[in-house]
Amino acid sequence: MFTQYTLPNKTRVILIPQEGTMSLTTQVMFPVGSRFETEKMSGVSHYIEHLMFKGTEKRKNTLTLTREIDRLGAEYNAFTGKEYTGYYIKADTSHARTAIDILSDMLFHSKFDPKEMEREKTVICEEIKMYRDNPLMSIDNVFEEVMFAGCPMGRDIAGTEKHVMSFDRNDVLAYKEKYYQPDNMVIVLAGNIDEKVRGWVEQYFGNVTSTGKTSHAKKEAVFGATAKSDRIKVVQKQVDQTQLMLGFPAFNYNDDRNPAAAVLHTILGGSMCSRLFIQVRERRGLAYMVRSRRETYSDIGYSYVRAGLDPKNLNKAIAVIQDEIQKIIDKGVTPQELRDAKSHSRGALALALEDSSFRANWFAQESLFANKIETPQEVSAKMDEVSNEDIKKVAKTIFKMNQMRVAVIGPTDEKDIVF
Image: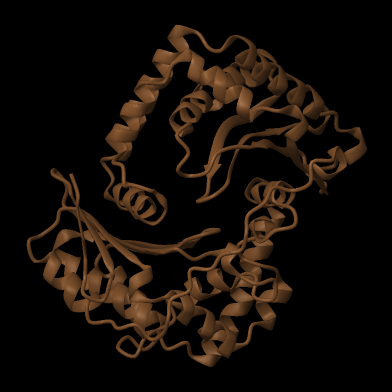
């Protein structure tokens, strides 16, 4: 069960009590990310996320701020996506008031000191380099570049070094003011919720007033061109293991077919007994890691398969993946696969729900993007209703080979890849 209400300043609050835990996760999320940015400001949402840890009027610098959280023994971090930015602190419930106070202070009273802002630019540039130098971490970016070529969804969330180094302080603050408003945020508290929590939330977040009109404008999301030459991107890199990611246009966050797609991906590549794990790794020894997943955004989405393998086995792996997909399109799945996938999903969900951070993030995203908030149990119940015919219909809808995008990082020529 959960409770949701709205503060007088239009801030949304969700409380998710959880028995049997002494922790409390406090998470704040804004519906703003890289797809909201102009090309000039590419990466600014991520940049602002970093700057929130650089000190406030009350907590003068990074050391003062982080020391206060660290002494609690808390877990804390922030994250930026294509269409959201989140901040959280997970701590012993006895520190709930401190956590709420710190998050509010960071989000609405950060100093944005010019010297700190300049210094952080180089930190982010190093982060960009770190991802780029690691194919396992950067293959997602390469894939989305080709999947969403021509629109902001295809850009790296962090931007480029050139973008980051060119940010003007006034432009950054103006962007922040457009989106970091009380009526554009959701606060989710999950775990051992004290009866005093409501009062603290109102004390630290309810007294924040809007400083301007909130913007909800985001750039249109479109898939890239469908010509075969436009559906592949290869980044030449001398590595021992090539990273492969291939995928297809699929469903947005609110599509009714998502439960069937979730079950499909569990069977295709979601566990050690999945078809791809058995056929790509166990039967043929082509890869150590192979998995199938899906990504859903508010108005667009895709399904994908990832693998890491020897460059000489690239085409073999693609052929096996396509063959396994075609089998599901033609014949669906077996009754045992369907039962096992549903049981697997229920079990994994039960484990995840033990973590208050998972609960908080689930409800934060539901609040921002769902037409109607659904609990994990409600979504699980929908997956239990999925039939073999549902699986076949979804597979036929998603897996169109003339729509497949391919991304590769490794010592491979584009002309040598068969798909």
